[in-house]
Image 1 (cartoon, each protein chain N blue to C red):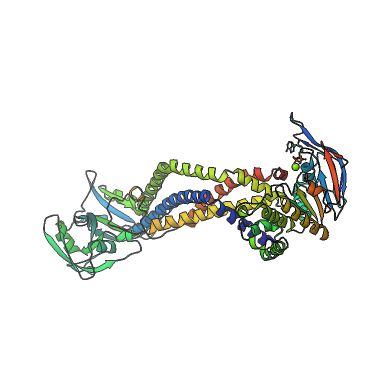
Image 2 (image 1 turned 45 degrees about the horizontal axis):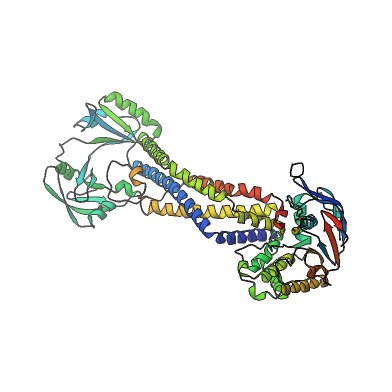
Amino acid sequence: MHPWLEKQRHLIDFTLAALARRKAKNIGLLAAYALLVFVLASLALFTQALRKEAGFVLAASPEVIVQRMVAGRHDLIPPGYLDKIGRLRGVQKKEGRLWGYYYDPVVSANYTFMARPAEEVASGSIMLGATLARARGLQLGNLISFRSYAGKLFSFKVAALLSPDSELLAADLVLLSEEDFRAFFDYPAGHYTDIALSVANPQEVRNIAAKLANALPDSRPILREEVLRTYQSIFDWREGIVLTVLAGAILAFALLAWDKASGLSAEEKREIGILKAIGWETGDVIRMKLWEGVLVSLSAFLLGFVAAYIHVFYFGAAIFKPVLQGWAVLYPSFTLVPAVDGLQIATLAFFTIFPYSAAVLVPIWRAATTDPDAVMR
Amino acid sequence: MIQLSAVKKAFNQGRPNEYWALHGIDLAIEAGRVTALRGPSGSGKTTLLTLIGCLARPTSGRVRLRGEDISGLPERFLTEIRRQTFGFIFQQFNLIKGLSALENVILPAFPTGRPRAELVEKAEILFDQLKLGHRAAAKVEWLSGGEQQRVAIARALINDPAVIIADEPTANLDTALAREFMAILEGFTAAGKTVLLTSHDPLVVESSAVHRVVGMRDGRLVDA
Ligand SMILES: Nc1ncnc2c1ncn2[C@@H]1O[C@H](COP(=O)(O)OP(=O)(O)OP(=O)(O)O)[C@@H](O)[C@H]1O
Ligand SMILES: [Mg+2]
């Protein structure tokens, strides 16, 4: 093996032995540091995953949704309204949508009921999200009854389970035929909840919105890109809030780690003197300590990051969920699709490994550059 | 082997607590022989050893090693000379606690980048010579004083130095162990090594293993 590599191996060997000798100190340090990484990484992974989810959710939604406003509130689309829109250049498809919320007291959760054309869902049957099915213990072919807001019981047969890319997207979704929808909610015939427009060219979305506002002054066009932007900034804002709340704790941990890392005991100073006296160069001592810093902070990073990954993607970020999720609707349970951003990891890794290694180096520099003759006394 | 001319050493030079530990030393140390420095406490013996062993630089004067002036070299070169030429046996042994005897012995060779297997092999040979083979894996803090010193000796020899420097090598040993040390000293001479040591101990300075005794007092050489 190359002498340089061999030398680094020696230095790592020595570092590991040195770490093992100061077990209590180093395990405490590792734990504090890993916890710090865990908190930051959980936060980063969770918000990143939510952003990704929001993207998924909205990818499936139409580019423009038109709502009708009455007295500043969202109201039903009356019959004939759809035709008033007329032909708009760039709009590929326009359709009236029917959807509403249903509160299920059995699992204390809100479902989204949505009507689909008869070709997709036959009358008397429903398709529902896998999460919801799990919560109600439903399987394909089972029957389920919902009591409508009017007090009548409706029974449906489970025709299919939805398992899209994003569980969050379909978690609470129930699809049923238009006929069943209108009957269940006593929805007035010919009315719709809103209108969905498909626009192929994203450049045209704003134009179309402007034209709509002109043609139908009582309408409110909602653009997908704007919703997306709103979601992103909500998550950014929430992330910021959590960071602010945690700032004190993070700072305390950072200071603890810095203090532990940068403190040099008399014993360690003596050892550095001995190493220098028996022929180690100042550079060797510093390299050895650098290895120590890198090994400790790298393992803390890996430990904290893996724990955060498990926390976020297997335990649904139980610690941060209440603050960060903040969706209006309650979800019985859901797992996020693992979404990891390379740049984000790199940033976190840099800001955990680099300052720590630097903290280790500062005092060593001073100790390692003192004269080695001190060991003779 | 080593020549000193007009070597002076001041501590805390220019400050109120300035102290001149050596006042001009002229000395030649012959290769292959055992030279002992003798003198009362505070006479500057240890200070002189640190200058010869490249652990410190003289304030003025020259130290020559094999004819080459080493007194003005930068630290990096001094370290290299120290590692290649000198082996140190410290009075307090200065072993690193928590590591095994074997690990302590191979430490000085780490910067050379020699493969570990080679170092371990060399250390085992030294342990056998010093009758320490059975304690190689023991942590140094569990060893007796005599054993610790032999670990320190093995460590001084791992890089195969030409010169061994020992400060008060018998100060922490009883008579029997001190005699053993003198036997080891004869082994060094037989192996052609140059030895420089300091001692108050009559057992050392009057021993036939020591070829020359240099007296010191108040930072100057005196007739022994
Ligand atoms: N780093 C230092 N700073 C100030 N004074 C020092 C320093 N090192 C040594 N001295 C002084 O220099 C003088 C010589 O010290 P040195 O250790 O060389 O003596 P010594 O002959 O080895 O004594 P001993 O037999 O007690 O070991 C002493 O008076 C000591 O106090
Ligand atoms: Mg001394």
